Length: 339
Ligand code: NCD
Image (cartoon, rainbow, N blue to C red; front, side):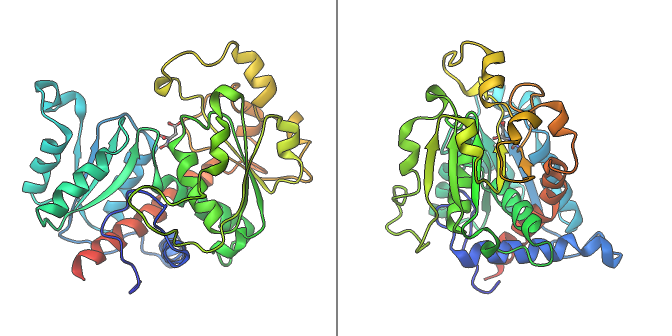
């Protein structure tokens, strides 16, 4: 933990292997807490954590709030519908208001990419000690979701020791609306950092060819990739081809609210070609786990039968793991404030 250097968590492109290990190890400790009889820790007593969600959320917001409570922090939530946003207040001024009330960590979700970063830059310039955690920004990034997906997968492959090396050389398929998925973008950083090879699968309109170069160069503002050897990214237009040889499958919702035009002609055809069901999972070499970040549209990207099949579907694990993962992230950010 002493090596943890992040004041904010905005994106995973700057995460080192050590960072992933730290998050996974701490998550595992928090996950085992209920077994030792104590669900709640005094670790963040007196700290104020504020969720600033300018976009709807079920899972992310409530699990962050529960994670904060489990660490004994005070938690304050902002609701766009009843706030002064409708009076023209900007996200930055909203953030300033909560920081003036003493927030130590702001968890920010916004429909536009870059808003959490803009807020973080502002507070860094004004030398405020507040940490910003990106709860999902536009199409850009959703780091805590990718970290809980990573924990769930590494735990699936070795429940005794969930660690990055459990994914080395594994082949992971991500299927569906890649273009509009900030979860996929964050997962690409995390999975390739751990040495997994990712095959992206979807129709042309939802999966542009240049995704193949996604993690090949560090994003703007960063000079160097902290990961020496990343796994490969490939693209497949055929689900059958993508599923041959896979070790795990991620499926994604069609994110219609993020589409600027109708990019699909027919939902039935989409389900037939890219929906995950027991029939096409037979292309996999063996029984493999299926993940989905939620919210789910049953019968479109995934069949109800697969979603409700606990022998392969890890969606419930993703949701329950989201609490210890988010506890770990809040704990690390709070600790970075003491340094
Ligand atoms: C995702 C999101 O908001 O990006 N959901 C989530 O946080 N669990 C995925 C989605 O919207 O489909």
